[in-house]
Length: 306
Ligand code: CP
Image 1 (cartoon, rainbow, N blue to C red):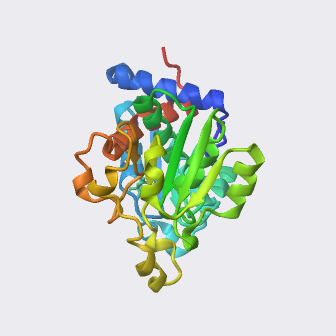
Image 2: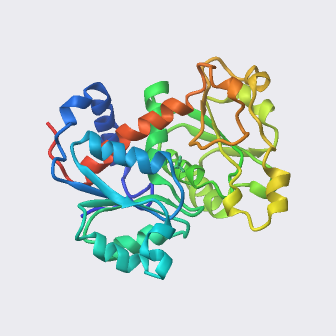
């Protein structure tokens, strides 16, 4: 039995196979509509979510399966003090696979140690968000036609942004990738990712504060939200929250093929006037999340696909 806790739990070949399967599903979704008949997905969400939880549920329903779960810690027995270990032991009798989001880093990993069903990390604190990364890889592959030889700009909250941490780890395994980190001093990428991922693998990267200056060189600009829920101090959040706002004027600096991605939800960091720009692909990205999660469920349940 396999789990998906870290973006590196699948090697490059396995990741590519999963993306191939997602692309097969995009081409002919009806061919997969009964593959998971009788199977159940549990969504255990201790933190708010729109896309991840509902795209997991849509994915399982599209495959002919069923879903059960909770969408906040308050509506589960976590509110009475139940541990993640006890919860997953019980859920293992109720479902065939589960997706867990938790504010504490490492909670899905703990769950996987006690689980009798595959556990998928649907976001753990400021640590990782591997299924967002699979969504991002599928988006880049579909819209750029490759996962190699790309200059990726990551902008905003690089300190707490788990989507960014997972994306860097995963993309660093492909040839010809370089990164431009665009953030204020206070929200820079954690040192452990710079040292253990980028420097260890010799991946070219630079850290800058000015967004417009680097935009002409980017293949992808990955915008992120400044995450209020991870700040200890509201004053710091207010000071930093609108530090980068991508608008139509700034988009004039970008190449004609540069993709603007965002894991969503957005707050102010991309103005709505950018939404109609053909380079803005964040809503398409959210749509790809369903297909990649269908592929992931099939892979972890080891379902036979013709
Ligand atoms: N991208 C993402 O994780 O969105 P949600 O928080 O809505 O699930």
